[in-house]
Each structure stands twice: as structure tokens, then as C-alpha cells.
Length: 149
Image (tube, rainbow, N blue to C red; front, top):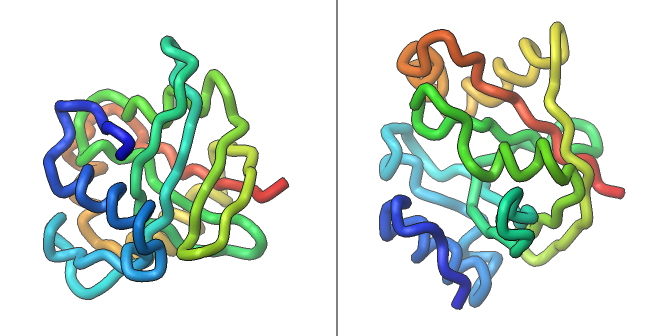
């Protein structure tokens, strides 16, 4: 079992554990747990800890756009970026599981028009992201593209 940080809710640990045991079942997540509706696709992102250098896993909602996988660094609309995003800023090389498929990726932050287009894709899938942006205040929530190598 991979341990997640203690500040995250227990359902996140449960989702990681399920993804490692049964990735096809874990691929879909009930968005009502986070204020959305319906079932959403999730991937399991593994980053390298910026301070520890250790692997860090987290399930995230995603949408596939072209060859890349798009995720949102929302941290529920808090004023600070999530640790996984800070990890990617230091080490953009990462690994994802998308159902049974696995990919080594390079992460990049979408900017300008690309960011706006991808933000719309993601808010169409999970509307609470718009509320998170309001809650985040001056922090512009990053839109991250995970490009398979």
C-alpha cells in the first residue's frame, strides 16, 4: 500500500489503493464526492517529491486532449498550489496510470489560449473547478498537460 499525505481525506487513500488493485474499476470516480455530478475518468499520477525525492501518488480527474492528459492543480480552491504540482515544477518527468495503461510523461503548464481552451474542457467535465478558481483568489489555478514520452 502506498501512503498518501495525512492531510488528504481518507477517500483519496482508498482511491489510490483501488487503482493499484483494480485500475479498471478505479478509472471512474463518483464526482458527487467532490461536489460534481456523474462518473468521471481519473488517472493515477506519480510524481517525484520535490523535497524527499520519493515517489508520490495521487488520483486526479483528467480529460484526454490530443495525445496528452489534462489535469487541474486546484487543491480544492485553496490559495496555494498542491504539492504534486510543486513536485512537477521541480521534476516534470512523471508516470501515469490510465485504467490498465501506463505511461511515462513530461508535465507542462498550459498558458494563454491553450490554458483557456483546456480550462473549458475541464470545467465542462467537472463544473466545481470554476468555484475553486473563485476560492483561490489571486492564484491562477494551473492547467497541466501530461505528455507521454
